[in-house]
Amino acid sequence: MPMTIAEKILAAHSGRDDVKPGELVEADLDFVFANDITGPMAIRVFNKAGGKMVFDPQRVALIPDHFVPNKDIPSAIQAKEIREFARQQKLPHYFEVGRMGIEHVLLPEQGLVLPGDVIIGADSHTCTYGALGAFSTGVGSTDLGAAMVTGTTWFRVPESMRFIFSGKLNRWVSGKDLILYTIGRIGVDGARYRAMEFCGPVIEGMQMSDRFTICNMAIEAGAKVGIIAPDAITESYVKNRARRPYRFFSSDPDARYEATYDWDITQMEPQVACPHSPANVHKVSELKDIAIDQAVIGSCTNGRIEDLRVAAKILRGRKVSSTTRCIILPGSPDVYRQALAEGLLQIFIDAEAAVSTPTCGPCLGGYMGVLAAGERAVSTTNRNFIGRMGHVKSEVYLASPAVAAASAVAGRIAHPDEVL
Amino acid sequence: MTIRGKIWKFGNDVDTDVIIPARYLNTSDVKELASHCMEDADPEFARKIARGDIIAAGSNFGCGSSREHAPIAIKEAGISLVIAESFARIFYRNAFNIGLPILELPQAGGAIAQGDDVEVDIETGSITDHTTGLQYQANPIPPFMRELLTAGGLVPYVASRAARTTRR
Image (cartoon, rainbow over all chains, first blue to last red):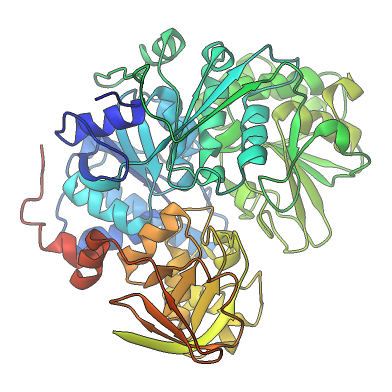
């Protein structure tokens, strides 16, 4: 039976020759993880469920990245809970401050999540690893706690939707713009319960960082997974990182899709999602005179070295507007180190941007850039819901690192060409 | 099992940041989470509702984050059931896992109104709006999910299997 890449991976992990959308399967898990917000609840579930040892310490990670370095005493308690559990369980993949990165930047970089895997994480942006050709999805703490015991979980096999991108990318148009455009077209529930498969010549020509950004925001369209067939670009990213064997899957030519979208992106300009929905997407040129108080560049969506290079291209030799704060968060220690080696941090500091240690902090209004009532931010993060970055009367505009950096310089939402 | 309560009405795409804002995720204390339930949509919500009341909403309820704190906050605030046109995927799963009953009903965003007195048979999915006198039939809960509810959620379900702890 012809199958999509998502169906093939699920079949291979549930001892089946084939699976069909709508079927329930119990799948073996290659990797599971939680963070400092979801981990404490998952550990409680693990204990209540009678868990003694995790199913395989090599396949479990705990990453304190959301409110760490600890933002307050309750956050310190939560971080302590997962630290103590990691020690008690002798988990090799616990990442302490200094070694910690934003989970979805860190885990692929460390070669812990790999092509062909089935992965669950207690974080909705776990769908990021679909960029490697994995079936990877976010779950709640109960599912995660249970999976730490059994190493398995159940899935409803999702219908697949195919998004084919062709044409030539304009300068300053990136993976972020493609995914914002996609969400704008189909809506925040346009792919609810579905697998979003991204393909076509534009995707095939894209570097891994753009592919991660695209799959990262599949959840913003309601998807269970975003997925891209692995290829030579995937192989070159993975081969020197992988800590265990991996496997490439791809969709059969006659696989069935619930819907296929075929978009020529040659005319596309940078996209911006306006408040308060990731689907409220406009071309950057349509947004005139939208003054911003803050620009955030980083996160699991856009905190990779390629993202920082784009920001540095724009910020080099320029200053952040006197009416704007710019906060830049490298996504992991490796990204930070690389940015240091390439002189990017110097460029940022000379531009009078603040450079932070890796953390999810500002994206979800935790800390390191919380907004007051009436304040407005442009951000390379993934959500602009009401109150997402702070006060309920604050606003978030989602954009690429290029648009965020240009906007930081202009003090208003701007196309990079306006400041270069 | 029958549930009867007053309806609290919300629109489409109610996201997890509205259900429980991230600024309160520095704790997993369920009473504390419950006290901030739906705060960014209605700051008084947790204090206005009575135990057993029901939330009705449009499509894609619970979109956004995977935070299980969201269904927990709703349940611990005293809400007995959420009826929506549709639910976001992770929220749907989390609700069953922590024992918050939810039902999908195409009319949930429209015909059922704020303040209506509604009675629901969880087993059959039969819904009676005593205020309007109208009756509805919700999409039945898939059998696998009913098993989870019968077991009392995922934790007791897994506990029964914990004897075979390791797979590899």
